[in-house]
Every structure is written in structure tokens, then in C-alpha cells.
Amino acid sequence: MKKNALDMSFDELKSYLAGIGEKPFRAGQIFRALHRGLDFSEMTDIPKTLREKLDGDFYAQSVTIIKSLVSADGTEKFLFALNDGNVIEGVLMAYKYGSTLCVSTQVGCRMNCAFCASGLNGLARNLSRGEILGEVITANRYAGGDIAGNRKIINVVLMGSGEPLDNYIETVNFLKLVSCPEGINVSRRNISLSTCGIVPKMYDLANENIGVNLTVSLHSPFDDERAKIMPIAKTYSICEILDACSYYFDKTGRRYIFEYVLIKGENNTERHANELIRLLKGRPCHVNLIRLNEVKERALKGDTDKQAYKFLKLLTDGGLSATLRRKMGEDIDGACGQLRQRYIEKKAEKAYNI
Ligand code: SAH
Image 1: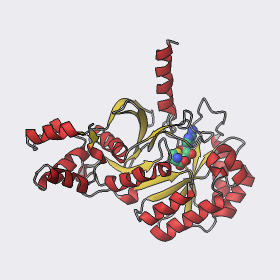
Image 2 (image 1 turned 30 degrees about the vertical axis):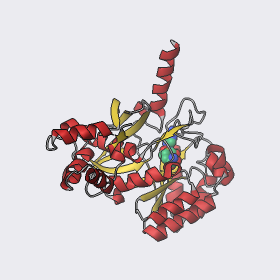
Image 3 (image 1 turned 90 degrees about the vertical axis):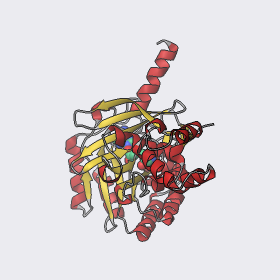
Image 4 (image 1 turned 180 degrees about the vertical axis):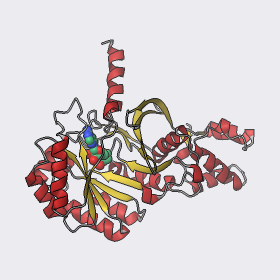
């Protein structure tokens, strides 16, 4: 069976090539070409016999764009197909200082948060390291980017579908691959991993010394209320999450970020603001408030901009570092898992002739 070439580290590619009697310098050539997003047939500086051998053993490309939606604000959402027919999504956000790509780490998700579309059909499967990398490489090539100095994607955020720490080994190896100097080489300082708070894995990640930014989806300062919108909160308390964040900071020196989706009547009152301030004041952290992107299958509602700014002011007046994330991609099913959900629905309609 063909393997995904992007699953290989530089060293693994080197030993594969040594094993078939190729010269070591080919490894750099092929690794760079793979990270540019080239198919074997496009690697014209490689002898044809070697290209054919590689093509027999590997897929060079693991992720293809089957649909792209551009929002009025310039955000672009991709529906990616994997080689086994599964689909995932990614979002490209253009900022002044370069583009940020939001990648998925799983097909679907097991976490089933009450506001999120990714968990609607549960987890289909984990993505491999090379498939997560494939999202970055495919989007970078699509955006006209290359590797080295001509990369278009500057930042990568693991905030698409899936829980990265629920696919720990592949995620960590992806982080190593995407920041590999011989390849696409995204700076680890420009990578953010977002978790719903799987505490033991947060410690493991800190101990890897990879140095990416850690973001935690908090969404409530009260354990009982948090558990109503995030089932994982029944397993790990906020107190345990905060301890793990402190450990991460001690190990990496990197300030951590809390994401907080504003849900009408659920988590954005003065009582919530006061408790957030009590919990977080003085910590090396930032709070990123996010307006809810309403998901039609979910009952929760977003709140007004006025309420969002009021909540923000309560936090900043209370001494927290906090910002309200600007709205992006609402018109293109911008939130986690929404586009894939539409795609699955349409496929089902076709299958059942509805
Ligand atoms: N599983 C990880 C990463 C994926 S979710 C995590 O939980 O952090 C990434 C972020 O998108 C989370 O903060 C999540 O709460 C947010 N999100 C998910 N659905 C959303 C929606 N409908 N509207 C706004 N933000 C959403």
C-alpha cells in the first residue's frame, strides 16, 4: 500500500533513500519539493526512474482542495479531500503581517462541545502528521507561496476541527515537521495549539519543549456551568487546567491564551466577568473573546456587539489583558466544522435523493 510521503521526517526520508541506494543529497531535494507541494511528476530535477520508484511507494500529496469559499472580509475557507475520501476544512485569514492558516487535527471530534459543529457526527478518525502538514503545504501553494523566504503562510493555528491533544502523537510530530528547517519551516513562535483542556497532555506538551503557543478554550469560569457546554469539564477542573498552564509557562516562558466564546445568557454576565478576574488576574495570560458563530444544529445563541464590548470592558477594567476577536468568515460557515457538516448533509441528500 502506498504511504503518505509527508508523514516522513527528514531523517526518515534520508534512511528510505539510503535503503534504495540513492545518494544523500537527494533527500534535501525531495524533502523541499514535497514541502513546496509538488507531485513527483513535477520534480523535474530528480531522475525519472527515482520519481517512478517514489510514485510507486508514496503519495506526494495527501490533501487536495475541493472547494474554496471566500468571505466578504477576505477570509477563505477550504474544504480539503483526503486520499481515503474523508473531508476536512481549513481557514486562511489574511492579516497585515501575513496569512494565518487554521488547520484541523482530526476528521470530526469526540469532544462534543455544545456550541461547535465539529462534534455533531463524533470522531471519524485521527489525521496523520503528514495530513495535517498537507493542509499547510496545499494552502501555501494555493496562495502562491513557496518555502524558505517566499512562504505565504506565516502563522499556523491548530483551531480547526478536532482536539489536537486527543491526537497527541500525530500532532506533536506535525509540529516538528512543519517547523523543520529543511522544509516549509514555520517558526514555532508563530504556531498556536488550542485545546479544550486535556490536562495530562498539556503537561506532556510542556515537557516536549517544542515552544509553541498554548491556547485553552475556557468558555466559563465555573466548573459546573462549563461542564454543561463542554463535556470534557467533567473530567478536568479549571483549577487543574490553570496549574497545567502555569507549568507550561514555567517550561516555555510563553504567555498562554484563553479563548472565550460569548454565548447569550450563558457565560457573559457580570458574575462571570468577576470570577474570570478572580481566577486569572496576575497570571501571564490573555483572554480572547470570540463572538459565537451560530450553528443551526445547536441551540445556543450569540449576543449583541454591545454586550460583547461591555463584557470586554468588565475584564479590562478588572485588570485582565483581553481583546474581542474581530468577526471573520461568518458568511462562509466560518466556525469549526460547519462547512464539513454542510458537505456531509449534501452528500446524504444526494444518497437518499431528498
Ligand atoms: N479542540 C480545540 C481546538 C478546536 S476549537 C479546542 O477546543 O480549543 C477552536 C476554537 O473555536 C475553540 O475555542 C472553540 O471554542 C471555537 N469555536 C468552536 N465552535 C465555535 C462557534 N460556533 N463559534 C465561535 N467559536 C467556535
